[in-house]
Structures are given as C-alpha cells and as structure tokens.
Length: 96
Image (cartoon, rainbow, N blue to C red; front, side, top):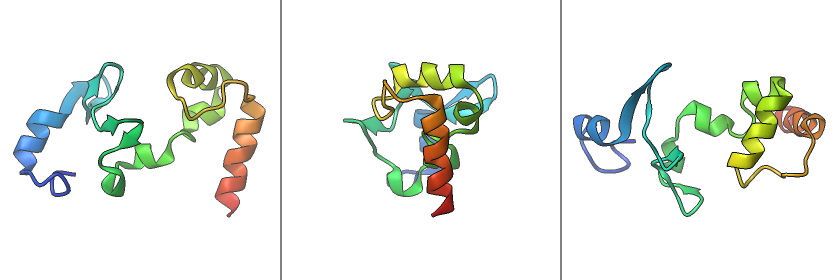
C-alpha cells in the first residue's frame, strides 16, 4: 500500500495504521476505513485479504445477528436481504 501511495513504509505506518484490541489495523475515520473515499477503496489493487473478503466475512456468514448489524453499516448489503440468501450467494460465488 505504501508503494501504491508513493510513500515510505514508516510514513505509511504513522499515517494509516492504528492499534486495536486484535492488533494493528488500518485507521478508521468516522467509522469507516481511512481508504474508503466516495464509497470506493483508494488502495483497491493492493487491499488486505480481509477487505477482499468483504462482505463475505466468515463472521457474517456464520452469525445472522452480525449480518443484520453489518447491513446497517454497509450500503452494498441489501437491507431487505435475508441471511439465508446471503450465505447462498456466497456459496455460489465460491463455486465459480
């Protein structure tokens, strides 16, 4: 990501990483990733694995309550969609 943004690794760490209870993560500003701009990822070509998984994170596939909570935070998830349909959609994507 630092190379894509044309900056050194130390500057990148200082500007865009922060500690969390689970370890270091990309910084969050106003509840969203610092690289999300106009609903698009500024570092899409090199985004982390967890971001490439979105929205099909294991926790959202396994836990209906987490899925329901994520619908309120992600405009890409259908607010009327069911957890069952979400899991099925993920399965179909993984088959192709």
